[in-house]
Image (cartoon, rainbow, N blue to C red; front, top):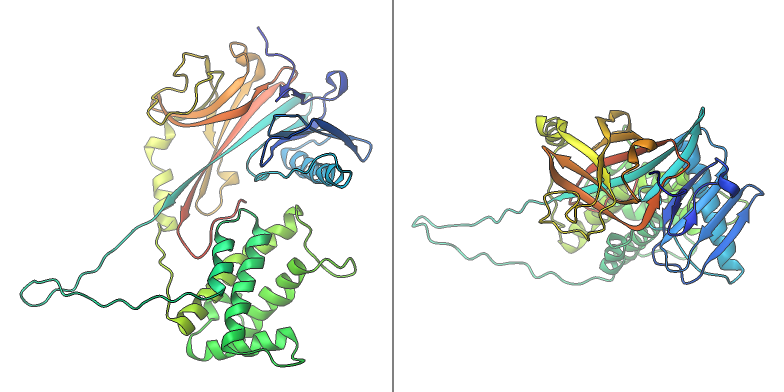
Length: 407
């Protein structure tokens, strides 16, 4: 028995009358209170369903996964913009770079790829003790930490999943603290003030590690990268000047790359001016690569199931309610790896999924036992597709000066 025609949350994935086209399904930050559908550019159709937190974009002709994702994401943003402007519904997507399914045409095959990212956070703690010659514990006095306004902006940067909001708040944190240490002078250009203020910090606490590699003048390089290139584009939107449009993947990626040096500069100023230091710990890249190259990972298999059970960390199987499970041919996919991220790819012909009524779970097994489980909020059917792919990424996140924003 084949699955029903492809849909998710009651929304069709293929074109009208089952026409084969490229597209994507993204996850919303909340369930849609209304059902709505809108055409974009004469080709794309963006659809949301009342009570579902999925958004479907269909109607493209892309011939690769990357192009299908890029084009569908742009159409999704435009569709949500129009639905909001016309007063139909106000919605936003949750982590569209990682929480999605994408389909495209490859020769005569229609392929759908589901994305799953598992993030492991590593934190280590050390508590030093001082003892006297007799071995008695010597009580150490602690410096009282005082509050500063800039801490509010820093905290808000840590709790958002939006890289642009994170950058704005981190820059405001730096601006708030620097202006107290080196007050802005009347009619002093912003970049001139920033260079003067950071220059004073740099004299006693080197900021060179936060500048671009090989910069002859570290402070000038920091001001250029963090203010002239990035801050102006994030804080302004004049059509006649460079600016960052939310959802523009390339522009947002460039901003994301500047978050860590900006956070580093701010924390360096905090330590110099306020005497506060942020704890940090983690694992090295060498250790991470050694972990993922162990024999244990070679036994990992990606599988899909129609089992309806909620997630329970005590489960040892992917189908605790005895739903059907179909394993996928699983291999390492190093072409997608980045630092602290390793990938696997599972593949199956959709005809082999016949035992499943739908896909309710995507997970992995190691030596036959459940290792990870993703329970889908909206059941997925794949009738009309030829090949199913599941790309799984394992990511290690060290605790540090900023959160790891979705890539």
